[in-house]
Image (cartoon, rainbow, N blue to C red; front, side, top):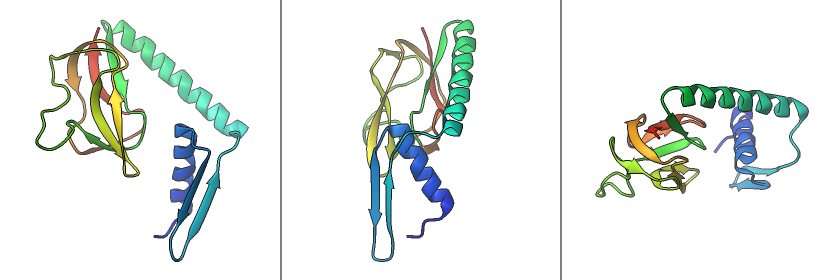
Length: 144
């Protein structure tokens, strides 16, 4: 596998987002070792801007009749059910509780349960099964 600057930067961002302190990749031709450290000031400024945008978005959402969005915490593939033969975790109209599993995101061969941050009624499911999802992409909307 070949790693370019883009792939290495993506790995570094994922480490920062997930709080990993280190990462090692090794094959017959390549060895990559990444070690986490304190974020540079330009990253902090960018992070603060992103947090401000998120806060502003949350304020707007609250004004929309208590409609909340559950955002994806990582990049990966979204799965709506535990397996192909099972029913989806949630459907439109279902009542969900804070902490309830609403889906799974596979990232770097790891299955991560995505839990609702809110209690309420599922108004809209914004992603489909096996869809690629991005960091902070809205997954569902819940009316509180």
